[in-house]
Image 1 (cartoon, rainbow, N blue to C red):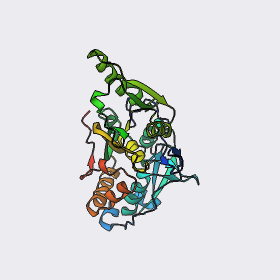
Image 2 (cartoon, rainbow, N blue to C red):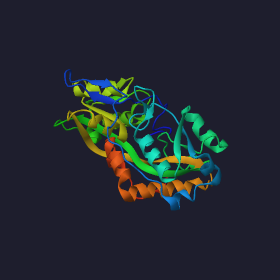
Image 3 (tube, helix red, strand yellow):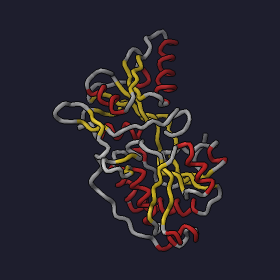
Amino acid sequence: MRRFPRRARYFGVLAAVVLAVTGCVHNSEGLVPPATVHVDRVEEIAAQVPPAVAASGRLKIGVNVPYAPNEFKDESGNIVGFDVDLMDAVAAVMGLRAEFNQADFDKIIPAVQAGTYDVGMSSFTDTLERQKTVDFVDYYQAGIQWAQRAGEPVDPNDACGLRVGVQTTTTEDIDEVPAKSDACVAAGKDPIAKIKYDSQDDVSNALILGRIDAMSADSPVTAYAIKRSNGRLENAGPQFDSAPYGWPVKKGSPLAPVLQQSLQHLIDTGAYQQIADNWGVGTGTVTTAQINSATS
């Protein structure tokens, strides 16, 4: 999740797909779901769009890539992902066209505050600290999720002595796995052997090939890796450390309740769940669109 410390620095987590011939994973950012979800304008919601935004006909969005499966570039250079499909649908409900503008992650919220972008969209974790400067329309619950090879169970709460793969610089690398390892040592057990890789592709590949016993990553990243693993990977234990993803808008902006209503419409019609399922991240969906729902 994109907050400190969930992602200490936001290097890209790339899409992984299993190649049937080799049994390995391969970075294939062009691999996107073929299904699309058609969404129509909803007049009573579109009528509430702030006049300046409505007049422009577009929703200006700041986004940082890559962070598959939420936002990344396909082989043609187009920005795609779960967040992208969802925001396209939200904009359609509002009668607008989503315009995605690539930006440094740390500059998106200041640009939203300055009015350069109408909204940010980059797997932002809604936090009480961030709510001091912007409002969030929360659209997803994400946490940490471990994965294992199918049929080879691993308990994330008792992984002492096991080899656990993480992507470098993530909170799983810096905080989560080291804390679990320290708990093992304090209990008189062997520490966890943390194995670091530069990309999530490498982590998933190592797990499939048996070079590590489990992996730990943000829940949508793990879900996407499992979806692309052709049955070779599965969840290990429950999701934990859950927190909401949100779209930041200017503090007090009248756009927030319109985004909230648009998202709720997609939830109620089933389009939201279908978009999430297309990307393999359906387990983190919400039933109610909320503004500033963070508790920490």
